[in-house]
Image (cartoon, rainbow, N blue to C red; front, side, top):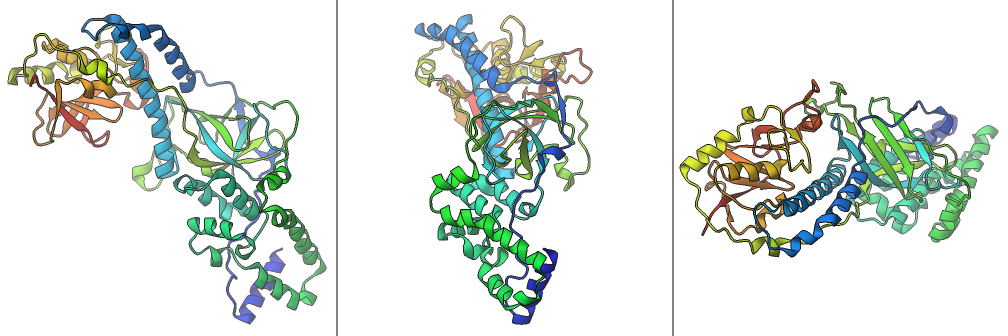
Length: 496
């Protein structure tokens, strides 16, 4: 093949035509039997976040009747209900964060001690092999072969494009079959140009190559001629059915009736654990990840500001025990968890019997009693045990609520997402904000301490959830730059 490319390149030079430096299209060549993955039991620290979400919803169902009574301070059943709503909100925010990171950066930052579970859109990359069946497990390996020249870039940026998955799959099958730009359909040409604006030059022109090959056919060795014929045969099925996706799909990814081949967890060369499972179609794949809490992040990423451990799905192909390989995109399939109904109306109806404004002394007390030094052993738990004080365990919303209660400002506990519904909190500008006011972020709430800083309960990159007896434990209560969670909205307590 190298001889043939050299001959064609020479032909291009002689004829002074373009297309000589085009990207080499062709297949993924990963061998199922040559994965270096180490199969291991489920990591002891892994806690399936989606299973936890289901558990929380089960608990929520037990408390729904508490909303039959008016919202009130001290109603423990209502507080417990809202605590579970907060936990659901946080879980949904975590899933959204995964999606946001993969869309924006193409990769997911992995935090030591944290568990992940999400689904990605995937694509068949080994034409004419039977598609996986539900329950199949996969090893993981970086994409090899000619496809490495173009496929990872497409998979990384696919989530940012408004392209139906079946159309993306059709184009990928075409490129895997070795097609050049001029052989693609008009639709596939336009899709490819969304990723590579210079696709016409980058992916070459088969017509030119065919002319050159015919002209110099007598100079090409017989062994190379046989390879050319073989490639042409591979392309023929795709070219025949590229306008009929159902027929093309039945050829490229035929259905096989068999029992699944489970695999379980594997330890990656990077040191984290991953479990890949087929969900019943070649179009999506379940991804579970766990990073040991004692994981030492390597210092070899560049630039230096990006030293964190990351998972970049578009680099890899998932290898089953048998049959079709799947390449993963950076596009997350939205988690369809149950979202709680909007409770704003009930919360807005609550009235304070003894409302008073915050004084300067109140604000000083808020800053003093919320200081991290007062909470050296506070774990982050969502939802926290209602029988335990915030010195033992808490989350962000329970912490701010309790701090206000301790200085004599009483309002019923509500989840972070619903604090805005309490009519006694009014939004103020950054210039108007004072120490003791609250800052509302997406999925987080904190107390403004002044000087562009805030204090609140945080997960502290996973370490605040550990036992206080663990040597890696870090208290949940932290002071940090107020923009570390993004742009927040200031709200102040006001009786007017």
